[in-house]
Length: 120
Image: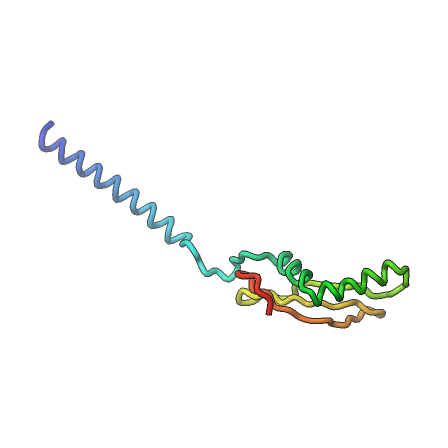
């Protein structure tokens, strides 16, 4: 091999390495690991509702409605547990019952951390 051929091979290898490093860097810049994107959560709103449903006081409250239904009493009220807001990684979950005439009566409001599942 001549000096010129060896130099061309070394330049080609250097260009390939630069290309690979550049592509890797661009991939990292476009989607960095552990991004703190506000929309990135580990717990969905449905999971937040399930966490609240399994709290002892909410379970007891829901049992009241089950007992009313089991006794065949006519009651124009239904329990509702729903996410009303998501902000800064926190779900706001309302627990209430509907009332006659389209109103509602709130039992409690909980906040669920979307990263840990912790309830406040």
